[in-house]
Amino acid sequence: MLKRILPIVLGAAAATVLAQMPPLEAPLPRPDAEGQKPRAVAMLAPYRYDDILWENDRTAHRIYGKALEAAEPPSSSGIDAWGKNVRWPYMDRQLKTGSQHAYHGEGLDFYDVNTTRGAGGLGIWQDNKLWVSRNWKSHEILKNGPDVAAFKVDYAPWPVDVDRKAWETRTFTLPLGTNFTRMVSTIGSDKPDPLIVGIGITKRKGPNGSGVFTKDLGAGRVSYWEPTDPVKGTMGIALMVDPKSLLEVRQDAENYLVMVKVEPGKPFVYYMGAAWDKGLDFHDRASWEKYVREQKPDFDPRKQ
Image 1: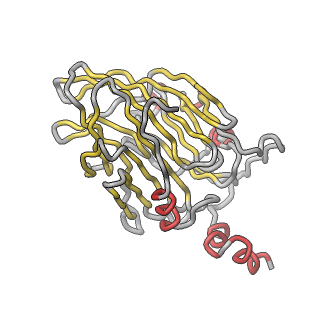
Image 2: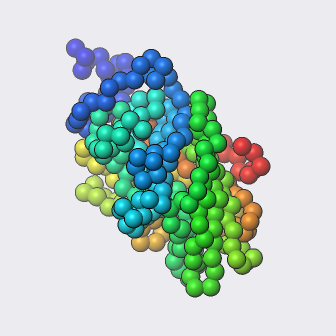
Image 3: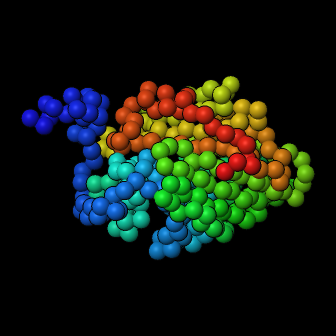
């Protein structure tokens, strides 16, 4: 009976997704009533090489600390995206199981960042190459919910080719009710010339092809619907940049790259969004891309 009523109650696509969730392993104990309330959170995970975790009722992410560079070299300053299918925070409890790549009933980490830019990491484009920082050097949690998660990180100076250095401070803000994290980045340099910043999304190649990458240069938006993992599903990733600063969209060996022109020392804004097709909100590429098109980003760095 349940299988027959699911398409009526949830819609056929959602019912199919629920019927094809990854195998359940060692279910996480469900939090109490207070813990099940939707909340935006940002926190340091010192038990896991200083990952910084942030999530809301729709999406979940992390970036990696310096400690991981020694434990899992070369590590990466890219951005990780987790699938989630609950409205409450789960990343901390999932990570503490030691098997975050398995499905314990609330979501899972299967988006492989490795040395790529992941979901919205950046670098400096020079001499036909992307020059990237190491993992974050220092951090400050600005707001740990309940309505907004916000934090700031600093990246130590890194070489840009052989004749320049760059460094960065970036603020991440994720309110409830959205799949998009707003980032305000200020990149410094030991030279005053403008920088070309490449903001990346990891390219994939799987048994089901390379996924679908779409771009709307006039709106400053790109979206990538990854090739489907037959067990764990599909991640959709999107970036939004100010069209006035957008130069082009191109690729390197690992990433789709949105190129923007940046003045050293002047903050700029971009947005990164992610969704899991086995989550609660988007179950196909069309619905994800429609959501991306409907966004109304604010690129004024003075606004929080």
